[in-house]
Length: 258
Ligand code: CIR
Image 1 (cartoon, protein in one colour):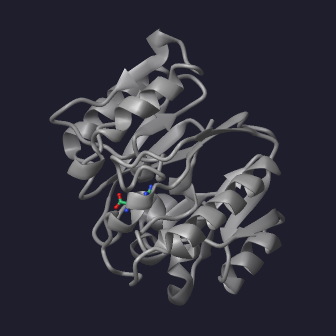
Image 2 (cartoon, protein in one colour):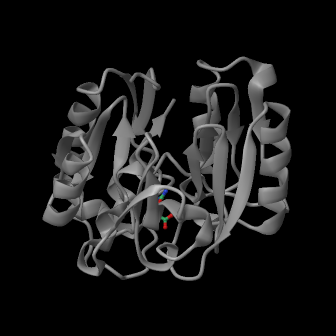
C-alpha cells in the first residue's frame, strides 16, 4: 500500500557530537560513521517508493538531522512545531522553507509560544493522532495541535509520558492495526485495541521502526524485533543507527514522511 510520496532528510552536521543526549546509550557519535549510516538510511528509503529530498548539514543546530521534530506532515496540512528543546527551537525556519515547496500557504499551520510540541511525540494512526505530553511537548502545544487537526477532520488524544524522550521512542504504528510497544506504553489502555508486539526490554530501542509504503525499516542488531516484524508479514530493511542512538535518536526521527 502506498501512503507516502515524499521523504525529507537532513544530512548530519559535524556539530552533532554536541547534540542533546540523555546518556542512556553512552559514547560520542563518530561523525564519519554517522554519515555512512545516514547514507544507508537514504538508500533504504529509496527502496520504499518515495522521492527523497536531502537537505544539507546545518552546523548551527547539532540535532538538525532529526528532522521529524520541527514539523508534522499530514496528507491535508503541514504543522510547523515549536520544539521544547531550546537548542533546537530555531530548526523550524529552514524546515518551513523546504515544506513550502510541497504545501500551499493556507495549509501550513504553526504551534506557537507558549505551546511547545515536537514531532517525535506525534504518532499518526489513520485519522487519529496520539500526542505524547512530554518534557518537550506541553499541554498548550497539544491544545493548539488538536485545534489545528480538528480543522482538517483529524482527531487527537494525549498520552502522558513518564520515562522516555518522545512518544515514538517507545511505541510505533506499522499500519494494518499493528503496533510495536515497549516499556511504559505496554499497559496503556488506549493501545490495547491494536495487534501489539510487546518489545523485550533488552531490545527497547527497536520500538522505533518505521513503516514506509508497506516495507518496515528496522534498526540493525535487534533480532527479536526483526523476526516479529517479519512474522507480521512485512518486508524488512535493516539500517544501523548506532551513532544516532547515542543522541537518543532513532529511525523515525531521521525523516519526515508524507
Ligand atoms: C534530541 O534530544 O532532541 C535529539 N538528540 C534526539 C531527537 C530524537 N527525535 C525523535 O525521537 N523524534
